Length: 225
Length: 225
DNA sequence: TCAGGTCTTAAGATTTCCTTAAAATTTAGA
DNA sequence: TCTAAATTTTAAGGAAATCTTAAGACCTGA
Image (cartoon, rainbow over all chains, first blue to last red; front, side, top):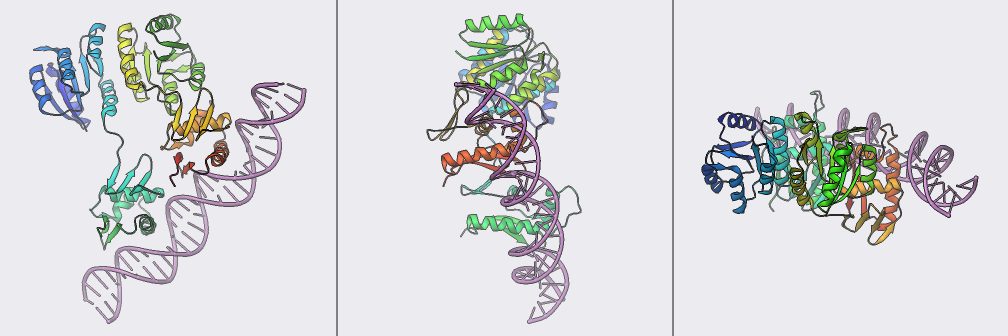
């Protein structure tokens, strides 16, 4: 999810963009002129600006320059019917991050947007709960900067517990997260749980606990001594 | 001044590009096919790759993917007569940094190139990971200023692991980086890995480790004792 | 061409992880 | 307190992945 500002005076295009991007989970705000855009930009933060060149009260190129001169580095992607090279070069030199000629396809827009968003977004998602940190992409679990070696299932269980830290996670939650088929001997969970606990105990000395809630499930908690 | 590799089979375009970019002070190397390009890329470092899609011995899209899979993050700018959205999307998702449709103007190319070059302008000839240093062009590996003699394949594996240090490198990654053909006995990797580990062990005394991640692949790590 | 190093294959040994099972312990409520 | 159900621990087994080593094939440079 990203906050995106659309500055576009063609209501048709604006509408289509809004619909599509909202479906992609983005939070959209839009305006059709430079004056309002400038006001909005001074008031709020955005992750990306989609900017038309030809606008009723001025050129998008000028707005872009103004934004950059104000020290604002919010990425700007131009969308414009102006296809001539001069305009593109001007835009890019003026601080734009990309320039897409109209008409364009939604897929190309999305892929170019994502390139930019990814570049400007904060690095890797790390799940954490106090001094417990899990990097699912690297498959590294750390407690107080100490690496804990976990099997795949153990890691999945710990991720589940950490994502809902403080809340109860039921045995059914775990089963359905770990297995496709339903016909699984469900005492297996207990076994994994035991191994997981042992490893956490050895690493943290009982301060990070998986507590069981009788008849309901499990809950991950730090024990403040 | 930047080192740029042009991969383009139209001699006309290739010539114009070369001339223009040389005038701009860049150092150019060029080839017209994928096979040679891959050889060149494995031997030398570039700051930017200009890549055509339609090439006599394959698709530029595949080459791009292969480059990325090998852990090489050299920026790639596509230049292609294919103007359809699908191809653009494929390219961008495959790790390209930009895609410019033919015919294009020299000014727009330059401005897009500069955008990318500026962003990546941390020229890095030698790959390093702590006290491990690899010079791929000279084929010299050093740990704590001590030279380690490695076979070609061992070196390539180590480069791969070092480029993605801290991250998991899969067996498939290694296979596709080391071999053209897909029908390779994949236990061979184990064997190389064993030899490589032995050499690292002898040189560093177990502080630089290739750890295996069961079911996923390998990861290069310094063991902080 | 030959020698020395490098690469690949193969096979057995080892390790890791998951599951099952059974015995031990804890819990809630009668 | 007592009992049945829920939970925990531990051990054992098997499947799959990985490691090691050795032997022969293969380059490659002098």
